[in-house]
Length: 403
Ligand code: PLP
Image (cartoon, helix red, strand yellow):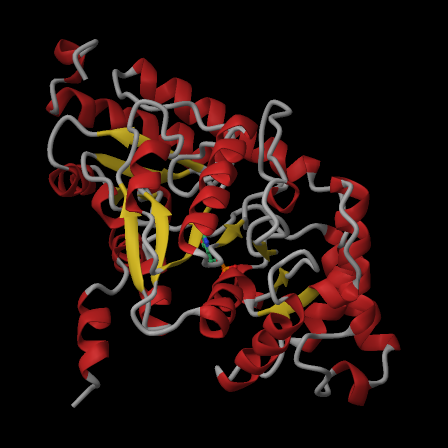
């Protein structure tokens, strides 16, 4: 018999993962080239060559007991110093190694931070549409996810609704920009307004409200768009970063938290995050991967971004040309497309054409589907005739302009 709390979590278990499994089943049946699996945000571009070179040289040159041994729960000091230096050069911040805690990806970092600061019944807010796993991460810390309804015209956060939903129990606010699933980048103006609201509410309630910036897609931004670095706008900001997407290393489970000195009770929170890293069973982030990151903090990934950009252009132009409606994403590698029928029904219809996409309700935003374009260019081009058949079945040509 499983724990009561797990019953619900298992019940809500990821639709995205289920789609991924379905993709593998269909590929076995029809051949991989005839299945258009846009379900999972699993980067298809290889990790930069510097990553493999770093692994080889580390294995050859580092002493094995150091390379594979335990280290402080926060991670290797030299690696954390290298990350702090890179952030300072790129964003004009002034971090050092004491501000960085190495984590088991973004998911690990978020769970560590919530374990460290959330009391049972505390509220963690986020903006729809949002990465569905946030609900489980909040539950892991006995918190409750409070969702701000979406602004579907722009997918910028709805700040009026946000302000009204903040309560004395609000402990943290998660933002994710560039965003999964919309690809929207929150503008500087949005961030400034959000910070003002949070300052005001902190004063009103006499509580600290943390801003948690979940940013696995920070570098994946197109057309030179500015992705503001949030610690500069609001003192109680914690950054959760991941190399899963930028360096195409999702299976390696490596990322970091930034805990600035300006954060209220910063030193105690760092200690609590270290202890949380240990008692959640991570103990520390994977040692070899930490050392790899130490050598790769400034690797140029512009070629990979260009590959995603080509996919973005082809898919956006292809789908909008067929009558589908969506915002042109400025970052990440997702398109969030409006559905003329219920989003679950859309996914079922798409499956008939061997197209796998994820319903918007998974992200707290029904009436849309997410299409992950971190796939090969050929998959995109070859899928367009199938999308055309789907558009015809849905009568999109006749509905143009009314969606
Ligand atoms: N946050 C968002 C918005 C994501 O899209 C993902 C993964 O897709 C994660 C967190 C988890 O990333 P990681 O693989 O680094 O744990």
